[in-house]
Length: 315
Image (cartoon, rainbow, N blue to C red):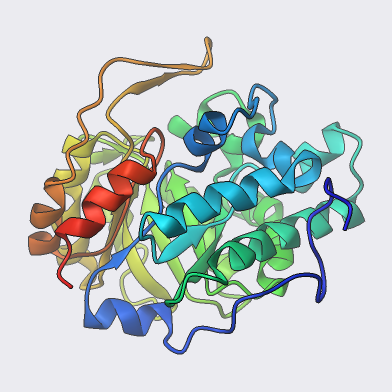
């Protein structure tokens, strides 16, 4: 196998389909997510300064992505989120990668996670990451939302890559780091066309989405949607996550997903993190009491912290 191309077809071991759905597992107890993929890739020596961020490695060094997933499996993660957060047809096109090859890379992100989980000796679910429109712009606007696009325009943007990811048969779609209700509505409409379980997680500031909408209204777009197996927040300050969990549970009656970042702040202009970490694995007890059932970490939360979280979960 060529080392610089993602695996396809029957090459190499792949994981058997899970014996339980993710939704069934969440109904039974708490499930452990992985942590930040980018920080683990940087710890492995990868350069993520490109506008494609970790998605560049789908084309240039897929073995590094598989190794990062494997690090989280070894830390106890039960759900692996694919390296497709910033992978879009538009972004790949800017690098001279055509649509056919881009579709292969999106599908490859799912298979790389499958391969990493194949030798775990326990059930591993793979969630295909669907990041917001702003992630494609690579200018920090995923933390602001309000791109000036209609819900219909956002649907047209998201549909092709959701189709490519769904064709690779992940166990769920992670509609994550969503900054506003309009994009959440667009993502849920598109996901509804493919029938896969999904979770919806907003990036928030205080009691509002990054675009400024009240969280009770934002979570409400997922209420009553049977395809949504969890709703909550990610890539936010841990203290904001604490406050959001109870609201998500009360508004939707669904299991809550929560995976905040370290509490450091992303400086989009400098493309660097600033401030101190405020993440404490002990917060997971409060999250569970408030309704969280899918827990983990986002940016700057590595395998060590995920292991700490796992040790605090009921056996």
